[in-house]
Length: 84
Image (cartoon, rainbow, N blue to C red; front, side):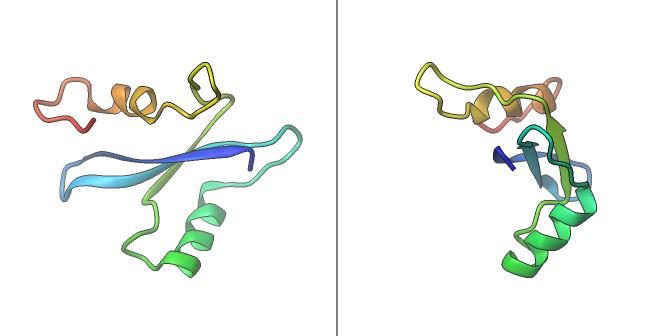
């Protein structure tokens, strides 16, 4: 894994759910089930992401910080309440 961001996304049942957005190192591969199982083993079911999405590149600030706000934005469009 190159980098990742863990964000909250809208969920019909709970209001919000945990989602991991991952940028893999070139040449590496994994799948959603493997990541979720790893997180459940280390963090427990409550804190583990419910879904995982793989992006080619995560948005970053000029100094290289991952911009979680930009990652979250498309998931909250059209919802009255949003998370910042």
